[in-house]
Length: 165
Image (cartoon, rainbow, N blue to C red; front, top):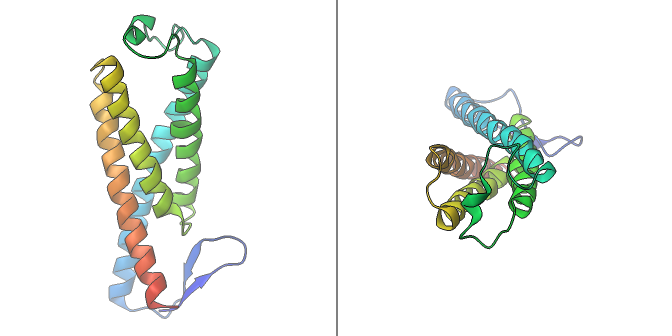
């Protein structure tokens, strides 16, 4: 199997001279990458929408989030959390989804990075405001899956690159 990099992007392309075992491995990679991209797009689109709602109305009213949740936190409003939500969990995850869907060689790296970012986001959120909603464990689980799939993608792509340099 010959691993090639296209000049147009950092995406990885495989030549046709591959064995059945390698085709199965590539198919598995493709499934993992597609699932990773769907998870990232889901997280990113939601975070862009809610991040913007919070930035527009830092009191949390438009996002249906009571300001009282921040009583024991270092924040007087949702503005700073909203900006972080929009940039990191929103734009970051959408960008990472694009890398995953285009099978970019950095998709595993960003899957790891933003999976960890989401896990840290949820853990810090629970530490600051407590358990407030069923979505906290849901997004924590998504972050864990994103991290696991990112590690898998990183290992598989790194292994293919090191075998065919």
